[in-house]
Amino acid sequence: MATTLSKLQRRRAGFAYLMIAPGAILLLVFTLFPIVYGLPLAFTNYSAVDTTKWVGMKNFHRAFGDPDFLVALKNSLLYVVVVPIIQLLAILMAVLVNTRLKFVSLFRTAYFIPVVTSMAAAAIAWKWMYEEKGILNYILRSLGLIRQDIAFMVEPSLALAGVMLVTVWKGLGYYMMIYLAGLQSIPAELTEAAKIDGANRWQVIRRITIPLLMPFVLLCSLLSVMGAIRVFDEIFVMHGPKGDPVNSTLVTSVYTYKVAFQDFDFGYAAAIGLVVALIILVFSVLMFRYTRRGGLTYYE
Image (cartoon, rainbow, N blue to C red):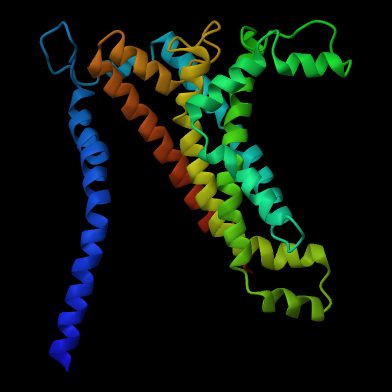
């Protein structure tokens, strides 16, 4: 009996490994291998024109003395502003669709459509909307809010905010579904017992809903921070590899692309990528420490 059970377990384990093998291979080839291969490059002058030499920390000193990289780093950190905005809106949307109202499934689908829309297609559509003769200016003129068209695409003070709005619109449905799963995982017995004990709606939210939703908040916040710092597609499609206008939309990922595939300075590009990875790591560690110390915990 034990032998038969052991064979069955081995067969199930083998089938499980077979199912995860394609994903593991893709992860190995397109994620782990580039990381392992790229790390040494950050300490060389590897490029398309020079003989490769070990330069040590020279690329990192160059990065923090490079005004374009500092602007890109500032814009990337500024882009993190989208994180609390998108998380708060996603939670509110999840609460809204976590009901048994009529047509609620239709709303869930509508909110999730941007997630499955190609970022390139979405960015092109928003770029058209932002044009001076685009639909956004038309709506604002029709409502009497403006008299002159606003140059959303060429005004440095508005360009980055416009791209942030695209990111918020595109990611809301994704995080909404995660929070919706978190809300639906909360046992109804807990909320019912709290109401029987005299707790009002706000007390139920503060003492039960928020604490049980915190693991989902941490997950979504981490994903959102990493996505904000590594933002690329929408900026590249809407404003090109130079971060126009006047470097106002230049972020680290776009600058890394420019250095690597336009200037062909691969060693310097690898160093920039490593700096960005370390920044993301610092954000992640700080968030984990903050939650562990009780900054976001309500389980007392």
